[in-house]
Image (cartoon, rainbow, N blue to C red):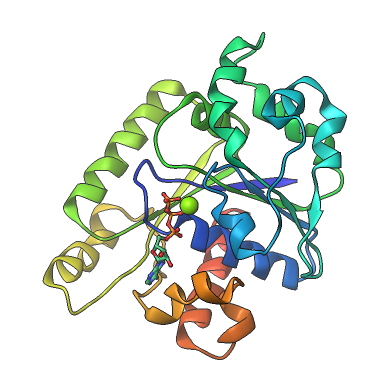
Length: 247
Ligand SMILES: Nc1ncnc2c1ncn2[C@@H]1O[C@H](COP(=O)(O)OP(=O)(O)OP(=O)(O)O)[C@@H](O)[C@H]1O
Ligand SMILES: [Mg+2]
């Protein structure tokens, strides 16, 4: 199982939107796909219309490996399952801190799923908590959506410095721009030269669009209600590039 985590220290940059759409594309192409809603806000569970109730809360999930399996939900989309979150996830940090290996708790939780799924997408909460350090530990590909502004780049550089210090063993970081609006001068400036300074950024990006925002009303991936749109295509191209990069 390859683990893609969608993360940024900043909130509201498109982590959930990206997780849901990429997981949908992965599943639609025939890969057994799991999406893990790790955010107590439960945005992914909301978009996929799954009732987010975790019996026993994260404490039980951390204690017993087999509990993870019982929390899996079907989404109604072929090949796509969900590990939901609910408000009890806000205590996950405290439970991890109490465990014998505080950095390995999440990896142990998902280990039993490795044979069942080809891809897992983790929709991360913002911030830099113990939960996120666990995510860094278990992830193969860290996808970092960001809005093209100088402050976002600064936050990204700090993240990279943090990861270099941590020497996280297998993690590959792939940043890309979301909510790009070429009518905004600042977006034009930041995106124009990014390839020279940071060739690691994906060439494809996601435009700012009301069609994308409509996911909150439609409660489904963009491909179900705007299949032929250029916004849907932008996610298709993004996913293609991510797969090429992470082979
Ligand atoms: N490309 C886009 N164009 C326009 N709106 C977008 C785009 N991507 C996301 N949004 C909107 O921006 C808001 C934040 O997106 P999303 O919830 O995916 O961000 P997030 O990083 O997961 O936020 P949080 O940190 O709160 O979990 C949502 O209302 C979403 O519909
Ligand atoms: Mg989110």
